[in-house]
Amino acid sequence: MAERVVLTSAMATASMASLTAATSRLLPSASIAVATPTTASLSLKCFRSSLFLSTVSLSQKRAAVPRLSRSFGSVVSPKCFASNPDQLRSAKEDIKELLKTTFCHPIMVRLGWHDAGTYNKNIEEWPIRGGANGSLRFEIELKHAANAGLVNALKLLQPIKDKYSGVTYADLFQLASATAIEEAGGPKIPMKYGREDVSTPEQCPEEGRLPDAGPPSPAGHLRDVFYRMGLNDKEIVALSGAHTLGRSRPERSGWGKPETKYTKDGPGAPGGQSWTVKWLKFDNSYFKDIKAKRDEDLLVLPTDAVLFEDQSFKEYAEKYAEDQDAFFKDYAEAHAKLSNLGAKFDPPEGFSIDSNPTEAQPEKFVAAKYSSGKRELSDAMKQKIRAEYEGLGGSPDKPLPTNYFLNIMIVIGVLALLTSLLGN
Image (cartoon, rainbow, N blue to C red; front, top):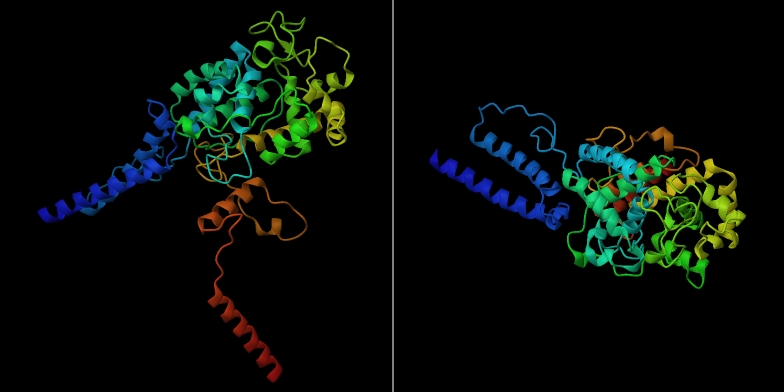
């Protein structure tokens, strides 16, 4: 009996060591970057709970296992995502209150964009490819010229991050960006969460991946930057429409007036030059005002003006100036796509906080829905299929290995059937 107890204890110790080592490699890295408890500690508890249950059942087969509630670290079915879904929902409510008191909608949108906008579709490895991975919290990236002033956004969000340690920076930045759009009167963004964080400043992207305001060739520059992210002309124009929010401050970007009749009294810190008259309201005024060009107090950058000069861009800019519903629809899709660029999700398909906050929400497969016609698979179904495919060892650039033996057997079977039919 004593030998059995010692053996069980040794097995538990070895299992714990291996699980702890695996956990340190797989869990989100925000836990390394900050001293407060994070998702890593929550996820480790999930592993330890499962191990504890196994050890108890081996050494005490007849002992009753206490019933625990279904939550993080539960014995029944632990759910250990990169971010805690319940904390994300609570953080969203805190962000709404922050927006009401500080009028920080524009800078929150910019924060989310600039964290995701470093993505390079030509680089496969995470996090070298850039994208929405929380790297913008590090000083080395905050000092990039294109990120001037974003340290203020991080300071506003840090108390919320400290309060909800189970939320990654990558998710928090994108949550704040989407919430700011919605609270300013914009469309509902179909967001998903579960982004993992990078862990060190060395994982930050190099400077120069974000767009400039006044390049020599505005249309070519926009395409160079956004095509590298995997976005197209329609998405470039739709995303540009977010300039309906906010102001440009010359001390940060080198563009705009120190103040105008629309910004001298705030709200928030006064000053700067806005693109629209009501620069805290999300609508299609940006496109209308650029097209009209009748107010010198409204800002028009070279990358704004080109939307009505380039023939491909102009098609969409004209459409959005006339049809706000079309703009809202295309913007919501483009914003959601941008927010996912380069992200590494846990679970792989991500999860929504608008339905069941503790469960991933892959789409239920219904064969009849996809059996005929030209119906397009939803993004959720594509993510599910891709996750399962990669789980078997495949990838977009690497097909699964062929089972030659099975192929030969199929050919022999077909030949045998044909021989039998011909013989009859």
